[in-house]
Image (cartoon, rainbow, N blue to C red; front, top):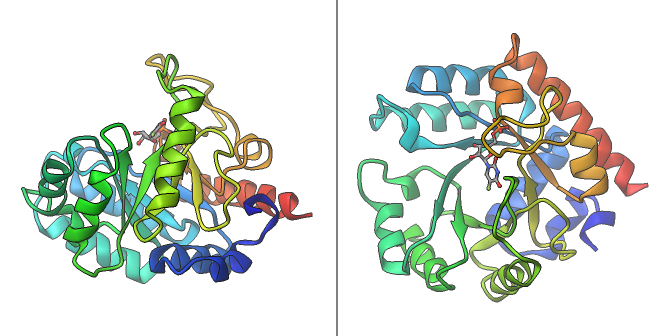
Length: 258
Ligand code: 5FU
């Protein structure tokens, strides 16, 4: 299953182009780190992306938190992604009826479908969002990560919900690339499991976030990719911090294969 296979060997288990590309990238670049670039201006996000770019497989954005967003931002972020060889995930957590989410995805100020390889989606409304978003991707290499569990204290998600989210992904493997989760929700090697709530300096943030270490996330809980925000963005040297998280997460992955 997923946990005992290398990223490289998992490429052959799926025909989803984006999953194949990300697995190859992770294997070749030897990184399973995603940095959550949660900073308030376009310049700060781009500067961070340039610094951490060599150490990451994925950069995660919350583009609606950027105060000075213009169409220049995704253009420049895409250039950095190409230069440093990482993919981009907009963590929008779509959660409406398919038609509305599809409009939010492909139009409006942000035009997310034109630049984000991956987006996050809440499965709560049912699978109509997956077909609707996939239609708007219009043949581009795009995909979704389904929120199967959350890192925050008091999260209402129950095991039966998580199991239903996994079933939904299994029914839509052309667009569902994997899960945002806190545990090994699926052993299917086609799906990526990404785990936020990872920090080496904090255990909580006072607003419900709960942290564990990269070793715990990858080795014990079964994450493929660890997502680190403030552990990197608030470090004195974000590039050095990203390198450390990447090394620790990738070592834990190699250890898992033994
Ligand atoms: F789905 C989730 C979740 O369950 N927990 C999260 O923390 C998403 N996140 C995101 O990961 C959150 O929106 C932040 O962008 C990031 C974690 O940032 P931190 O600074 O490492 O706490």
